[in-house]
Image (cartoon, rainbow, N blue to C red; front, top):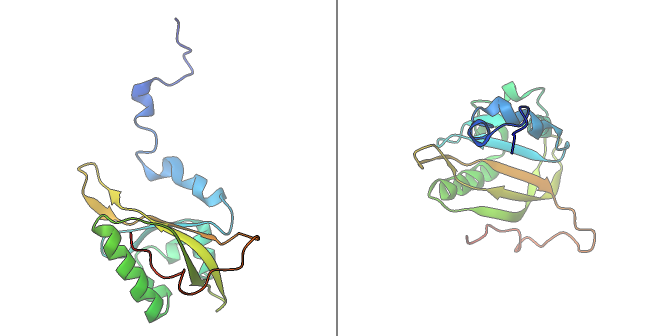
Length: 153
């Protein structure tokens, strides 16, 4: 069977996404409510999508890169986020946690947050990439504070 010259073969596909610019731009088109970001092991933001920057009232992702949660959030929230990051850096996953999250305009909303370990080519955990989307279950009221507490995973 003759292969179409325009179709990439398996070796070519193995390189797709190896550089962040190959796929990162797509994360800016998921919508203004879908926040995605990556931090290094010390908690410094290495990449954020545009929605993340806008959520904090910033003009661009460059205003976030190199900063930490302590630069962007209240002390209480930053401490909780750092505790979560430390769990992820030890190999734990936080998936589908419902939690109340603050915004730049001092409002808050219920969101679903997930964090998983990011590994380098050698398998070493190098940071926690994270995602957050608004709670959108019109069939049930927002969860209670108890159900929004950190998961035991």
